[in-house]
Amino acid sequence: MEAFNYLNENLNVGSANITEQALRMAVEDRELALNQQYLEQFENINSQIQSFVGKIRNMNTICHEMTNRIQMNKEKTQELLKKTAILQNEKKELVMKQTYLADFFAKYLLTEEEEKALSLDGKNGINDLFFKAFNRLIEVNSNVTERIAIEPENFALTEISQLLSDKLEASYNTLYLSIQNECRLLNVEFLDLKPILIQSFEQIQTKPELFLKALDDYSYARKSFLVRVFIEILTKGNKSGTSQKPIEQLSTDPIRYVNEMFSWIQSSILNEKEILENLLRGCHKMAETITEQTLSVLSSISEAFCQPLRLRVEQCITREGNCIVLYRLSNLLLYFVDTFNELLPSNSHLFMCCRDLHELCSNMFFSSVSSATQRILANARVPDYDLLPVNSVNQTLLLLRDILESPNYGTLSVNTDKREIYNKIFQHILDPLIQSIQLVCSNLDDFLDVSVYMLNCLNSIRSILILYQYTDKKLEMIKAQIEANEDVIVSEQASQVLDKTDMLDLYTKAMAHEINQGQLSKIVGMEPGRVKDSITQFNQFLLNMDSYNCNQLAKISSTRILNSIQKRTNEHILAAYKIIYSKICDPSNGYPVIEQIKTSEEVESILCKNEGTKA
Image (cartoon, rainbow, N blue to C red; front, side, top):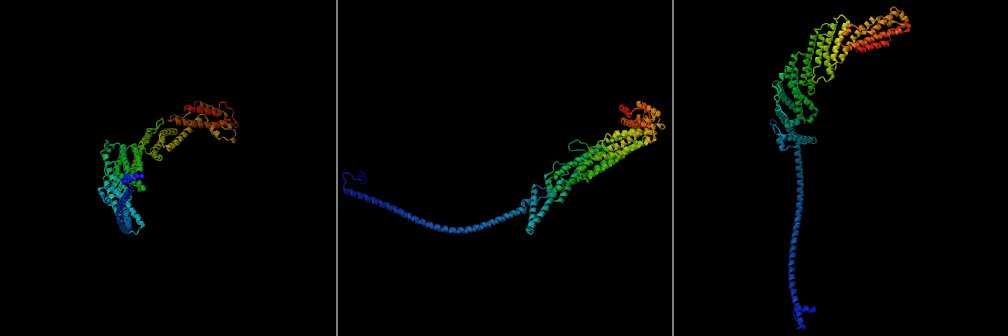
């Protein structure tokens, strides 16, 4: 059925009328048609294949041509690569040379901008570009110098070094001219230094000669300004906004007048020191000598004050006749001598001027003190009946007290200085005073009056000296003289007591008695009856000791000295009594028992009780 359906569909024959021949013819026609269709399609395919083959051949031809061209280009490319490699090598060499030259120029030569910056005229001022170029010039010159040390035969570097040295020298001169110009502007009052000036000193420090010349220019400018201002302060007063009057108006008050001048100078020097330290703060390469240079500049600047200052202070000193004022002036000048010694070198003119003024004032003071002391002591007279110090002694001690109480303005902080000055004062006041007292004492008749008057005067002197420091040596001398005069009174008082109680002869013989002389009671004057009477009289003394005192004891002004004399007198009396008592109580001396005799301890107790009562 499938075959029939195929035939029916493809041969278009009906199933009823179909024959075998017809079927065969239909099949043949169908085969022929199919073959015809195949042929047409094959021819079509063949033509397409032929066309493709032609294209393949064309492509093959093109490929051969391209291969040939590629081969030719390859050969050319290889040759080009060789040339390129050569050019690249040459380029590398040129780049290396260019880099070397750039490094060489950067290291050993200056740029046009730097050359232009260094060509500025110092008189018209310099700027930051100059300092940058100057630092660069120093760096380049250092590089060239180091390279020449390695390659001494390199003539190019030698020539460059010479050029750089000339430029460096010219730049230093430009710096110096700029500093000169800036220093001229410092002849006025200002608050801050220009950074340009500070940098200039920092750069010029490597040239010591120019550096010192620049410092001289700076000090000259500041000196001119300060001396002008100082004269204005003296004569016109302060014009900076305060109401300070001219210092010359204080000339009638020497202390304040001199103090104002020196205080202003001290303040100015401190201000100049601060400015100078700020100016030289970048000079680290001269750190070892910068302190010395600073002091030298300050010394030069302060020299301007010497002439007007010396003239005025000398006038104050020479016309002043009051020794106390001169002493205060001397202390004030000594204070500023110490102050300037810390601020300025010892060879500075201002320090030496101040020291000379102090010496002058000190000499004038001691001369005035001597004159005043002699004038006072010329009126010395014999003391009154009370034996108290006369008026000349009191006036002299009052003069000494006024001098010692004068303010020292912070000076004499060193003990040796104060001791030395005090010793000189004592030499000019106390020594003549004591000599005058001794001369007056030579006119007194009674030696006890001499001792009492000396004690009263020495006690007045001691009462003054004891109030002040560094008078220990003089106090020791006064103490020794007081003790010497006390010895005279003590000896006389003890002798008088022993004499009035008839114990002096007993004491003398008891002291001289020795065992080989036999019994003491057998010696003439040492009989028991006489001894008993003497003991009785001594006991009466113990009951009323004040009645046995010398008349001069009441005239001693110092209770302390009086108590000392009484105590030492009692010691002498007790020592004598102990000797007598020990001889009487010794059985070998043949004395009977004396009932009214007191023991040494009892006598000592009574004497001590009497001392306590008076104290």
